[in-house]
Length: 304
Image (cartoon, rainbow, N blue to C red):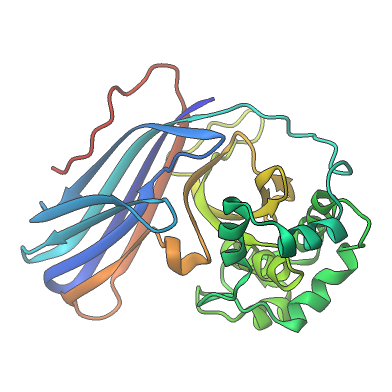
């Protein structure tokens, strides 16, 4: 499946910004199931400096500086991504058991396992606590397949928690999310990552996009798609497997990855430092994910 993703971010400031320095994670990365065919980033006002690099986690980071005074900042990223078709109904009861996986993580010396162990550690926004382990433990029978354990934990979060965009911010502690059983995709991804790490399973936070489909008979609205968050856990001899607790599913053809990290802090779509701007900038974000047949052309990265 081939997608065209258009991600527009606009900031309106109450006072002029004299200069700003920014880091964006809005370029889809290559993974085992997807390939970014092309990407273009357009900035207004024009930047004085831009730089593209691959970060520590293998994500495509984009840096830019604007030295011109401005009261509005607009960033438009257009990408074309090829996502491989995959079996969305695999037999999750097959494969290594939870008990075997724990032993494997302790003893295996393969480079990919050593790298995965980093994602057992607590991170700035996720602390793998005993409270999270207590919540997750009913899903992790020792002889049950690891994938089945994670699938059940994903299903429990989906069923037991309410999607409520008014409840939380990115700074809301996981203890509050767990107590009130509310949150958004970021909270649910943080919660599941924390639970998995607390149970001894390496887990990543995944940032990206998800295609939304309209109800039968209705047209899809422009800008109706969204940035999204889900998780990936390391399954011995299979690699990283992605689950989406917000939708009780494995990540499939409609999930487009921009970045992997320890938590949201590592993969924030846009962050930076501004000088001036007053208080309370107004943020507007629009995302369109559309299915395409023809390529946008060769990869380019520019600004206008």
